[in-house]
Image (cartoon, rainbow over all chains, first blue to last red; front, side, top):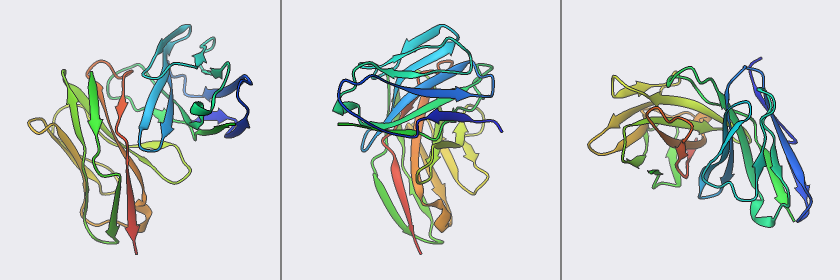
Length: 114
Length: 114
């Protein structure tokens, strides 16, 4: 089954404790992206990647890092989480083939930073 | 730069009644337009999209949206809603040829009342 998976789905942590949220897709998509969803703000793009070793900032990159060492994986790293990073995070992927391609979303990771 | 405005954060509607969810956008370049749906505790799914051609686009579950360039709008409509349509709906825009920079609206929660 074609899908985007995220782990963990739920995470409670404390300020300053480094964490990684994994994202993996099995569709051989070149493009991957991370969003955060907050009430009243909708989805905001954190980082995106056009292919292996190619990443770029989205609209809210501060406090986050990403890497793209393999085509299927795009982990989101919070080096020193803070309470304002408490949010619902979505990973997404799509083919680069053309404008008609659809973006597929993972199920989300709910993060609480105490 | 581009932006999306969804003025209605919540829309309650009786089952079998019609509904319209409003979306207005702002962009200095030509755009693609999307509606995504998020069912409770799930990720986002593409509902429909406008890339080019006919300004009226339809989804498989009875929703439709019309691109109005002069009014910079892409309102979502359904003539008769069902309980299963209860979800949050997000309008999104990306510049032509720049799909990596998708901007989402703040979302509209559609509550269908039996």
